[in-house]
Length: 188
Image (cartoon, rainbow, N blue to C red; front, top):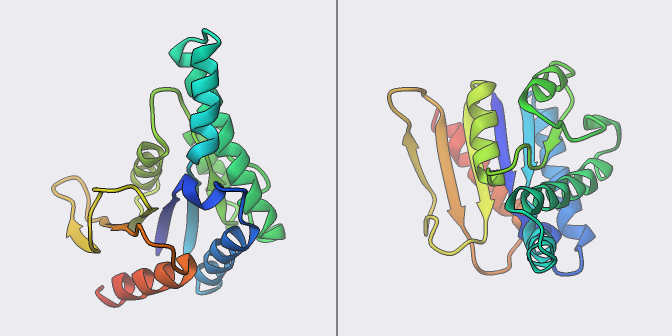
């Protein structure tokens, strides 16, 4: 299966919890070892918001503030890449064309933001569409996205499954991801 996982920026926030990042990396490596092609998209989190706020206070344009957010998400992506050694593509792709080339490498791809004006959620959706992903998972702590796991078929453009989870309590992210993936894969 081709799997895209959007990893919320909260995983990289609050003092950068290396164990959280390592847990996600281990889960991504497990999925890859089972034969899945995996792309993760790292969000910018609080760090991106701090840079954007500072940029605005300093008079930066919205374009420049978006670039600050993109770079923060790409730093988060690099942390996740570091946790996977040679199983991950060595750098976050800068655009979809570069991502498609990297995808041929059979490595786990970890992206951040790609272009101004898009959230990393939009980037994950765009990547999922560009590789004809079988599933897109959004691991977020954002209130009000969806309060329970729901799976639906997108129509008419794709048969991609979209699973969104909102978990506002602190629990083992890798365990949740494993359960979500197992349940989605077993439904096929």
